[in-house]
Amino acid sequence: MVYFKVDQSPYSKMGEWVIMSTEILTKHFPAKSAYSIIPSRVMGLSYPAYLRMCRDKYCARLTGKNHKYITPYFPEKSYAECLAKELNTRLTEIYKYTLRSQCNPE
Image (cartoon, rainbow, N blue to C red; front, side, top):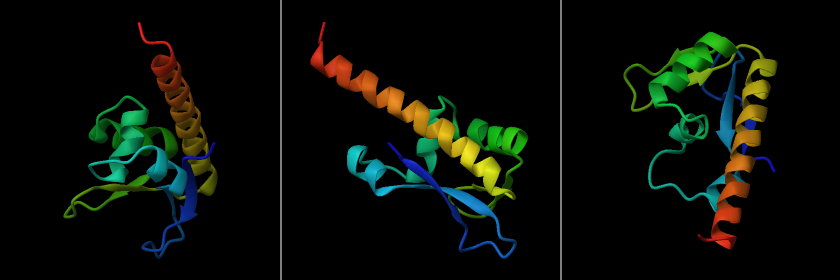
């Protein structure tokens, strides 16, 4: 199932890519906070640690110093797709584990 997708950023003039939540994610996991922090939680990281991982491992450029949330922008679509694939895999496993836990309470 695809919870995160890669799309070209409408805000970047340099043709960069961002990871966005899909409708499936917002339907299955309603959040009481910003959806921009969900990838960090899926990875088991704090938001600052997630941003550093995006920068160091996936060559993301971090922007938004004076905004509410800093956003990672990926220069190559392949970097963003690799991270989105990892996020989708992890969230699928979390979802399966949650369903098993609900079906088999101890």
